[in-house]
Amino acid sequence: MTSPNSSTSSSEGGARYLAVSLGLAAALLGALCLLSIKVKWFSDLPDYAPLLAYQLEKLDRSAGFDTVFVGDSSLGNAIDTETFDRLTGRRSVNLALTGLFGYAGSYNMIRRAVDKEPGLRTVVIIQAADMMSRADDLRGYVLSTPRVLDPDLPAALRWPVAEAWTGELLDWQTVKTATRATILQLLSRPVRDIVIENDYVKQATSRAPFGPALQAEDVVPGKLDFLQRIADLCRTRHLTCVYAHGPLATQLLDRSHGFFQAADRLIESTGLPLAAPEPVPLAEDHVGDTQNHTAPAYKAAITATYAAMLRPFIAADRPRPTEQTARTAAEPKP
Image (cartoon, rainbow, N blue to C red; front, top):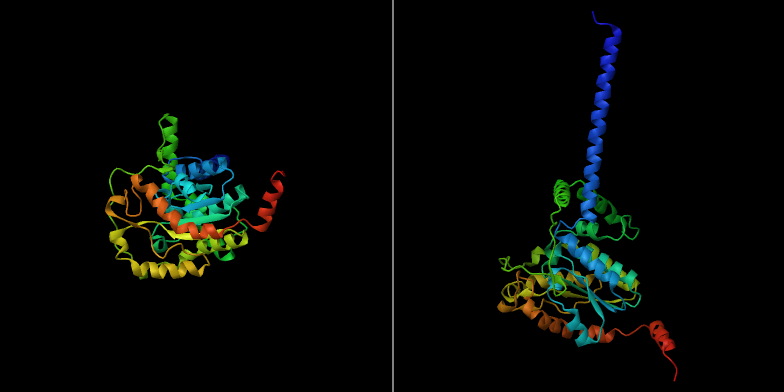
């Protein structure tokens, strides 16, 4: 016959075992979430992370610039700031990210640049020619925001951004990436890195196949969320901002005119001026490893094309009266 005491003891033991098991499971889940957060912000395993770190370090050590370029790889492979500054007399910095970040990444980089440099006067946004056909920019916002709790976000974007945050922190691919990075570090093996060449990621040795021509119906109206934020920020901070399409292979551009007519109407509805209605065409031998990347050997030449395109906006961008007064007061008297 089983005594009441032995039954009670067995029941208590089972409860303790269950409690310990649940506690260990919760601790493991918490550790995986923390690991996910760590890889998002501190590991350079994902392709986008080392480039973001490189551009933020560049911004941190830059000073006295009056012009900033923001955008994606089409910008990174098209604009050489030394050539641009020589042709325009400006002091510029190129903060190009990748297409993953979209307009949200450009918005966040402009905010960082404004906070860093009070003398900033001109912002040039150069995004991939097909950017207006891509999905929303919420992930790009989460990955690049300078503030986790952002009071500047409009109410309509707060819940979608919160969902994007949750998705990133609980994403199984993120957990696998974090685990792999930790194992590599424990084995003292290098984590995936990038090679910087001429101020941007080195291009691949082979060219990716071209995509299809762009059609007017490919335009995604929702892409305006963060582009409108850029336009509003420019007005609030009294910045001269201009939008320019990234370059595109001529054989695609020739079959995509309707797309750019539709995209331009939406872009201009934000109040941002367009430097040109269509992308800079890339001849066959000027195309790099993708349809919207300039071949490295022609980067300076394409920069000169953009400099000529942007010159009217730069000429119209004079120092504000208070800025000019401050400079005059600082000049030594004879």
